[in-house]
Image (cartoon, rainbow, N blue to C red; front, side, top):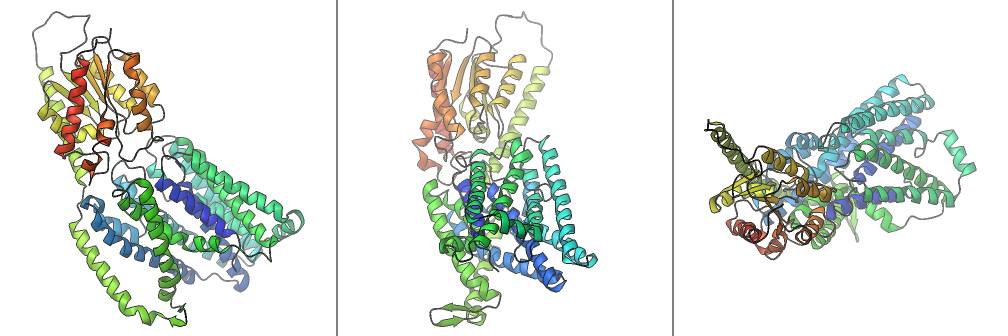
Length: 604
């Protein structure tokens, strides 16, 4: 039995996910699309289990696991086979750790793999091609645990009424425990990916769906629910209720942010509750529109939604490094829909032993054994080749790692020299400036080019670190200032990782810098940023500062980089460590700003 209007739930989840991945800075909370899928999956599995128990007074655990694996695994394997050839279009950095990625994906443990490797959708570097299979991992883990619990409950429950009650309370307890774990863990974390990927903390949407499934299922319904639908609901009310909750989900997709604590404390819970209410509304609407046919476009998108989800992420990661974001999103959508349609309507039924009609011809699995076998052989061969070629660490990460090690060594050497006994000298209380050189405080962009800058600049100290934000740069500046190590020219190369309070934090840097210094801001550049990005907004605001503060000079790296985008080919569009052509542009931008700063007064 197919419930009409459930398609809208799946479509909403898919749209939220696609908007988030394609236009992350505008639809910052679209990741809740996965929670919509989770809630719907929990509802569906539990409702079907109740229907089975109502019919036969049994729940066949083996059949349940078989159906689930046959629904999930074939599209996953087809996605991997289809996607791997596209990796030949980009550098080897895009297949970093590929053997482990593939093993985690097909072993349904990607969430654990990403926690251990520090993976995230919000990565400033090249994200893993199969990071999105973290949701499949949690889903399969839910099936294993919840399926077994349902099986045990059927063994100790004499009738469907008591089974329904026990399922509801078991779901409620597990949902409460999981949501509480996420709430408590969010209190003490600044990096939220570990709880986002956590099987324990992020499994509660399934159980919220299960609670609803035990009350308002598909065929076997709670009598009180059936009576309520008959007496108190009409078509208009059901439509209004469903649409209102779907609208709330889209609102959350627009306002939530991955890096905000409130998202984990309340956001995911709200998304799951709104999704459950939307499912309830769709269920009621189905029963109030017995003669209405659901539009084909809804059912079509819902049918292929799982496969589109599988295909879109790796394709977008690849194409977004070749084409502008809008074009990459368009190509990704077209190919994902095409591949997903072939997978869902043709290959998957054949693999499950069903015949597929094409025109007047009926095709069975035996007709595709040879081409499918050849395709899988080629895919496996290509997969083995790519795994052998895959680096264990990307060139960017390697460059940053070496830069960090060299910086640590330099700082250790400096500390040793400064700790050596020196004859006492007369203090100049008026001046905190060490000398006429430059102190550069930067983030991962500066860290990647640190060696090049040191090789081509004199009398310069560089302190750079990956993921450094302006508030962290402020702490570095104040520490160097208190130790008397701050040179006359202070260069701030920060902003790629700008948070919402970028203006407030930058004003602190300006205010608390002691007299006697020039302050130079190098505008941040993100190759994929548009006017909605904080890094872009920071650059625009920084350009206004010299009019207000005479001791501030701007080195407009963002403008320079945008004028030479062709040089960034093969990079992530932001980092360029190890590329001398871009490093020279970066060097010239900083040196030019220092030259202009010498013609301005120091801070009084």
